[in-house]
Length: 239
Image (cartoon, rainbow, N blue to C red):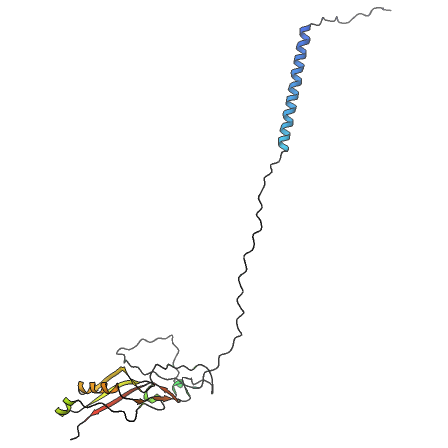
């Protein structure tokens, strides 16, 4: 019917400047999108990167040598029982002038241990033929009543000389001397005491004589021991 179609809207004439601006705008938009996409990718790559730290592993050090083990203790052996006997009192050389203090922590003395029967140094509750330690102190002297054989003057030993001055004056007297005789039969001069003397010249005469006098030592159980001796020396004139 209609050989010619009528255009609904008339075409506008395109300008060269508008096309150029369109190209520029599109190019900027594309560039911006590319930049944003690249930045997002970089951020994602950074997030994916893991922090790796290297730790130096120390080499195994050699173990210190183990201390040597102590040897096992020897088998316990029961001590032999002490022999059946008695304790020995020590004779005091120096007589104390004050009452000694009482030590309540010490063991109570058993009077049965001082019976004088059996082995010297043993105890009353000991065993006949016991081989246990015997409590003795060889340096301590015995009293005369504690020994089996007391000290006696050796044959041929001379007593003290009479002081000439006192003889001429006709003076007589006595000296009661105390001293310890050791196991060789000699008087220990450091223990000498004049318990009683009528004259100092008599005392000196006794002291000088003891240095050369010889005695037969005391014995306990066939063993020579020291003994505390108290011996009087009489000085008298034959008238």
